[in-house]
Length: 333
Image (cartoon, rainbow, N blue to C red; front, side):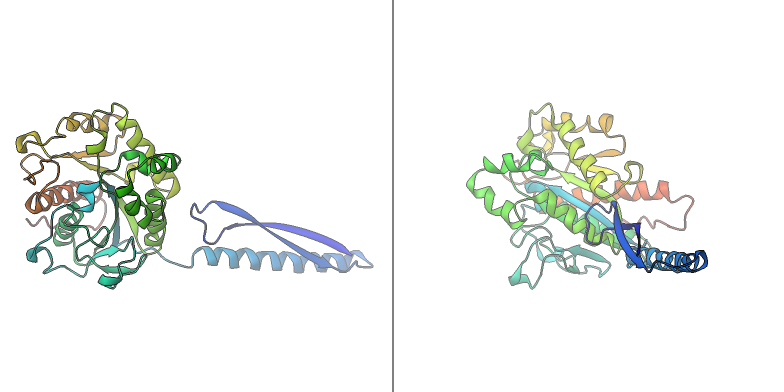
């Protein structure tokens, strides 16, 4: 008997990283009595190998990304999950081109994790409020061509430090988190960063990740290492989702501004340094965005305005990158 072993490069199905792996195939042939018979067997083996390679490649391309389906990852703490109650005006005239990929099960809302829904608030967890992501998405679809769909994924935990989204350090942070936060963390399977990546992988099967929105910093006020910590999270997202920095902008909103009496407004100076470390990052001003009575959170009107500002910046970036494409920005107010 002659044993021939072939190693075919393929992509592991279900792999989160999509890194190439090796599939080993062993083919047994009968020992031939002469060279011509062995040559015939070798030819058949080559044909089998070619067929298997084509089959494995077809599995890897079992889905096709829709370049008109734009995906945005949103994460942070309470101002990203939404602290203000949404109002009637926030629940009407929501385009079916604006979608949410559900991050947690919400049976009362008839929503299941990992499924798509029209982006009706709440966009974070089941009992959260209005978030900048609401009016970010609304503004995006109203200014983009009608063939473009916008989808957001919102994973946020009120009161958390940026350390909760650290790929390696989240466990030690969670171990010392206050009891009231643990329940929120557990809704994301105990790993909010992991849930964000999990959902992003689902979304990538249909569309293209165009950017990342962050609103976090209140709990890290005064932390001189915050910029480096955010960069570590951003770099991990790029690596784990196979994204390129030059095509994946990071948009970061300021805390409630000093002009609104924001009690964490001092953190805005630190946030302003982020573009020096992450070149494709942009600070979204909160100046004039009205605040809630606690001066820590925005009120509903403040969230609407802040969300529009995130969108205005993203639209300008799309406009710049689309000069050699057919994407036309409408620029409605």
